[in-house]
Length: 300
Image (tube, rainbow, N blue to C red):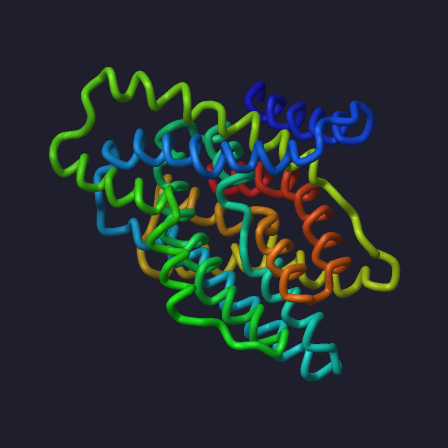
């Protein structure tokens, strides 16, 4: 309970600071830089060497891919039938297909399941959400914006991202017996900054765009992202014999709020910015209730 309260306090504090304290320009971007390039790599380097690879580790990765490609198929089909613009379809594919598996996912999973659950969350993020963002999400954004992504650009984004590089290093370190205790003693406190800073940054960037006239579209999109998509992933896991904490964490990561980077990507490609921000903001608020509730159901 205290861990979840910490998440809520950091989120609200970020919003209050952004609204009333007049923080330095670019502060949220600077915090994001620390989270992505320092804290997240530290967590990956700390936890991955301790992860014991098992046959069901495919599931947290597959769950994120099920949600993304399911969102793409669903939005394309509904959009074609209802005559939606390409910008609207592309926006919904991105924000209803990609989950906030690091900025929101890591703090929530750590609060609900501790370091053991966080190991599986790292796998879901680094082998699931991040490759999707860096590859198929770019393809979708470019396609619905009328452009064409470059393969070399996609590959370069994946192999040069610091956390992905640290994932490879962490796997190698684990094979060699793990880090000395003094290395863990350095990595752990640096990685611990991710939870409060990530939620504080989310709070600072929290926005609601043009909800008016789009309530039905937003409800349908979040219905997939927060409920139907994770439920499909759960069915896949159960059907293929996955159980225990890896099943729970995989479903919860699939059920996270829309990814902040997905909304940024939609804006960069000239898609529907107001719709993206509305889905993102409402999704973040709802996920603070739906994810713990889903955890209670799964744990029960």
